[in-house]
Length: 281
Length: 182
Image (cartoon, rainbow over all chains, first blue to last red):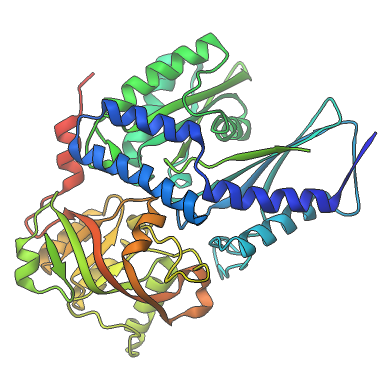
């Protein structure tokens, strides 16, 4: 049994909050550069350049890439041989969020009650935490701040098994079409297929943690990703919705078994500010 | 094209969907909760904390300014959430809005009727856009935190005309130009 202290988790989360908001990943930057080479729309190219310039300023000045510093979504893999000591695990993540968003001059975007008073909690808590227990004695924390503009374009489709692969493609492409300029394209389309309704949505979000543009390890999912990406980029929405070839930088699919009666498909759209940062303790 | 606030009818009449502009002067910042309060004040016949005549409202909630900064990252938020309030504000003299994403038909109709304009700024480019803000102060609703009402002085704030008074729509034009049928 390995012990990990509450304070170690607080410190890690604090650093992840700032790091993820200031530094756009090399995978995203690379992917935008590649899009720039292919983009036919002059306006689209200008916007892709602005995105790169924005990332440079954020990195150099250590300021948030986007004023929407997101809802703090935290994915945790806890080794079954880890013993957390010195305090409450969930509170450690919340305290790290509180400190990271305050010290890092990050925008606090959480309101305490969703449909009535909507009073800002002023420290971006509570975070959303997804925990898996895995073999080993490590603790992996992945922090993914998620902006409201793209999150609001999420969709869940409970398709019929007869709808099949083409039904999945149609649902995803239609969701992206409807989202249009709203989620700050170019986007990364997270797709979760199978499981149950809530599991599909979690798969969709988890798929966004993958390095942008790296195909799925599953050949069938990888082929589906390529087909959806082609169809999405035929929509013509383009960077910021002003027309062009780059509506999405990538499509990421995660699938798993499901009930004989079901074909759940979830779409979680990620804007170009595709922030996620990980630490293994 | 460079434009100056407050906007006049002549300036607005010269703007066309798809055109790029650099905006200078005063702009106000309000998003969801601030819009709700402004409209509630209008309903109650109470004085408004901002001038609407000829003005521009920017849909934005800035990140906190680091020491030495005028304002933190300051990119646009998605506009459609303000749609329920917008026709009221346009009827009261508001001439421009800056945000990102599509507007409702009711807003597009009001833009034509009241001779106003809807601009988009680049979503997610908050660090870059903040450089065009020269002065910033909260003028009302401070308790709303990220959603407070701000007054900004901007210089060459980059934006694109999306909806003009002639019914032009830069999003529709863009998709039409680049869509490839299956």
